[in-house]
Image (tube, rainbow, N blue to C red; front, side, top):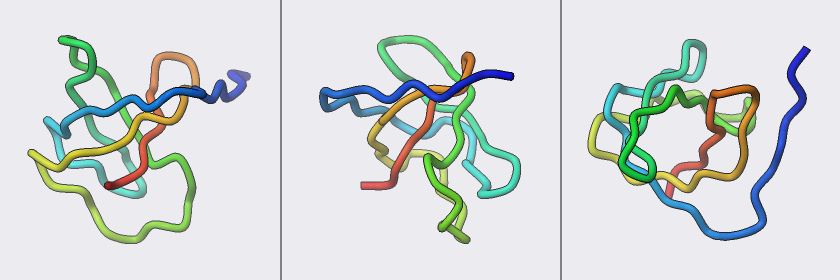
Length: 68
């Protein structure tokens, strides 16, 4: 099982494929495309393409994000 790793510095990205609370999505981060999901399960709205997010950690290769 993959453990969560959380980042201590401010990291920001742009949503490239809508992030659905149940299925995740994709973001552009440091000039690469990454799978992404909400950092916590308290969100019920999808984040549309073009939204700015804060990258707060990762699980495996999936980045954990919070909406700005």
